[in-house]
Length: 467
Ligand code: URP
Ligand code: ZN
Ligand code: ZN
Ligand code: ZN
Image 1 (cartoon, rainbow, N blue to C red):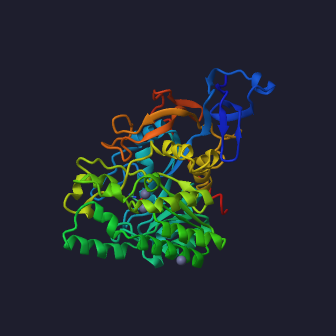
Image 2: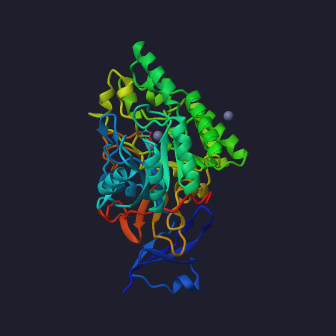
Image 3: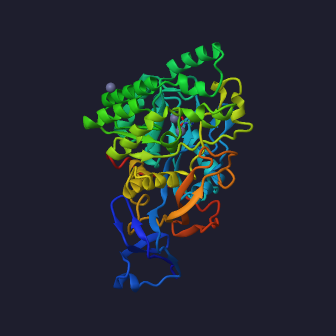
């Protein structure tokens, strides 16, 4: 006997449509949609009916940028695949794409296998991997082809972090050329890390050791310059480009200019750049360390350009770059030297709510919310329409969202394995009520009903905006 669930009476939202439609789920997939009250919907029988009256019925979120258990700065991101994907589920995100890391001197295969092993049997929601290239050479270039074939179709390169993840322009160009040939999408951390390291050294020599100096040395101009350079290298290679964690107005301008030329250049920003600023980095004592990430938080004036970019489609995706480090014991590593504060912020649980708040505040439309949080990341990384929408044949990754419920973001109540919230005290209108992952209810009105190991590894096709 098949397993059928009916979601009835809600407003079905996708990036394309808003309809009062009922959803029939069968054996983990969306079986059919029909107008609420129609004869077709009335004839459906199910084992379980979820009443979505007064609620939105939306696709599960796709967070295309997370770092569970990432080794960084002598420690590890504090969310494991188990705790991080459970928190994702609580926040209405049903797919993550995390980053496997090639060790310096190691192969892509070794790095990817290590990440498969970390995640295997642990995840509450479905997951895929990008690959971080930290050593571009003949053999890793060849391996890129194999990874694309096995469903790891995107590769992150770093213009920052010399001596760690950094690649020089020649290596970047070669990786882009390879991606142009095999369909792999190059994701760029665009900051001029060589220049930043000089400024870090000079700041520390002047005794400028507080967290706020992290924001001052990682200059807007050095993000804009790297973004510009990455775009030119991609043009030379004939490759598409996806710039991650865009934070500065001037970087958005580079993307917009490239897109105006018709180039296949894409951009992602993150909730921290939309809602937080250098004011947070300057919080007294060592509090600013909670907000140290790269690219850094910017002066509040930059936020308007990011919101505008999301409206004009010069930015396509909002992912979290979820990379939590506890304030106590991890961020602490940088007391007296901001350059030793592990970089990264928690947020995988908060993204859908924060972006819904932007709908409530009139910054984006409901459908744009679903686009930037679900559909566009799924298309960008080859998961659509299995993920990112609600359509017959697709996975039944569905969130019943109450657009009127109010709650307050806090470390007291969140489920991420980190001892602070970057959004402590922020009031949100809208709340996740029920979450289905491939038809299974994994969050049920304030109760987690999922399990570690339900989440399945999900191979991806190539970028659906260019291929
Ligand atoms: O500060 C950040 N973003 N940490 C994670 C690593 C990265 O560069 O994405
Ligand atoms: Zn990065
Ligand atoms: Zn330019
Ligand atoms: Zn990242």
